[in-house]
Image: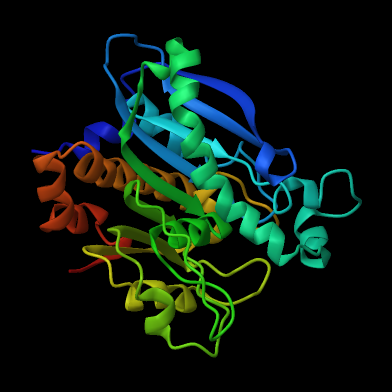
Length: 313
């Protein structure tokens, strides 16, 4: 039986972190910073690897509460930072970061580079594992998951097969090395001309969509209902949707931005951590107890009125 209540407060392994950057010579020496969460224990064997992508104006330092928790339960998590759509948009500029970001300009090439950062980082991992055995010993690159918050969720959607671009010229950068993904605040397509089936029909990964009733976009201002478009049209197997009651946009990042304090923050963070762990245990560790609990009513009951859960097969 999957013991979710124990998992909430239990972090069995000490977590270590490493920072660095990969340099892509094929993209004009593009520097891609990363932050790796890995367990200190040395005899756990190769562990599943989860990639995390930040939102617009974010960095590799966001969402640490999720990654520390996952890592303590036997995962390696790599946070990828995307120059051009990262904290460089606002750092060192007067005003609140959100206000600065709203006025910032980034290009279609910046977006493409963000998407291309993910397969580039995956390509670097075999050499990284060989050259850094103290960390590399923990990485099993045959068991890969993709995740991200807001713009990072959009990046995950693209890796899962969502098409992007203008009508009549949609592109795909689907990454076949991933087994499954988690979308923290999914982002609907801003292409209003193409059929939704054309945009989302290429998604072929299982995805866990997480949002909340107060998950309003801090930049564009649309409400959480628009985020449900991704779930409604995704064609991949086993699409899961959790809507936290009162859950807001920044709870997934572990920071508040311009949002006021939310009395449900601690409760929501615990739910997010356990939901993510059960999902990755299902898809990256083939844990039948986690799968049964998550997919057959245990998780929905465990939410205990704090949100709703929907499964689309």
